[in-house]
Length: 354
Image (cartoon, rainbow, N blue to C red; front, top):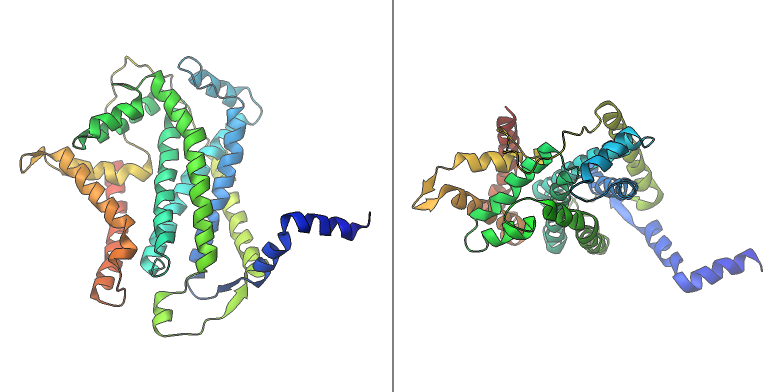
């Protein structure tokens, strides 16, 4: 059969030419903020690395109370390059979470969530929550002293939420305390539930990005500037790939010179050691909780703090709806609120570390 007929056979069934045609004709605006476009694709790169390394780790990991820690120990000491795969998985997760924060904050400051991209922002916020869920559930899986203690602290925080708090805490733990049941639940969430959610939301988010197109800088839109464009394929993809290679080089370097360690096996009967802190992406919230007094207006300070943070999360989610007049005074206040939030998170995180 002639070669051309094979192309026609595949095209008739898959219709790939329409996708390639779309990519060839897609254009990306060029301006001084174009670099921020790369942060979105960087998240995808780290997600793919997470999937690939996570699959390799699954070949050796055993999610049981007796073997979880031992399987990780064997992985990093006996399996060829097992320590490197685990280290890449850890650091790529850290960099992925960092870029999700950077991506969302750049969208906030550039007001790229403005009409008609409200749903794009909201789906991105959901992706942030799921990404943090990956970090939180994956942290327990090595089943060492530090991960057990941090999970006890983390799963105890929801108890401060009125009415549903104790139920949420017990649902996460699988009981009144962190046990092997918690390990099983976190493993199921980490490798099954959360991956399904993120693939669905990621597909929806990418669909919205393609449908609405790349946003242009807010100030440029106000001045009705005519921006130059370059083609998505191959020009923009080539520039992105250079950025990806730089990030991959950084990832490999960090993974080699700062490999992820493993503490002593977790002891369910041991008390929580003092000075336990969560991962860096929860530090500013952790430090914020410490700022509230024991009681406020007759309400537990911890409960008040949790409700305050939940209110902030809700406002963050509905930001495009709140900032419905970005050209007015309210829009300027919201922009400076974003800058203030970045500074606050950095100060609180550094304070917590010190």
